[in-house]
Image (cartoon, rainbow, N blue to C red; front, side, top):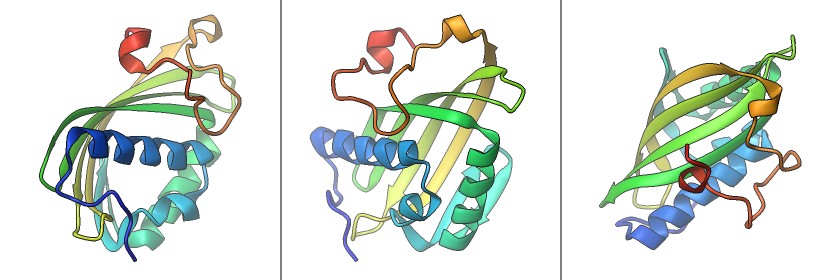
Length: 154
């Protein structure tokens, strides 16, 4: 299975790869998201370590049961060869209607077929008031005309 664009990444390909990842995560479909990763993909997400698609699906299922109304924006920070670094922000609420803005950085490494073989994520959560939210599009893919992180001052 091949998942273009393939490494080595130029800036345009890195941006395309990041937007593809953003779109998949905004679907909140763990099975769909897992297909972008190698069957033995290695993850570090905060303090949790995962291996393989099965663990990724279980993790994302738990995540989106806890993080409601999830909306994400990713932005490429750097790229070289088969690696891409992104920063991201997502907004979500818990089941008590407390809103959060989560800020993070990810380091990605891809195999020759364009599947992500390694993902390292560091994330910090900040409580926000509902009126301070910046991500208001309907659940799902961020509209093309919605500002990105830099334009939003995040």
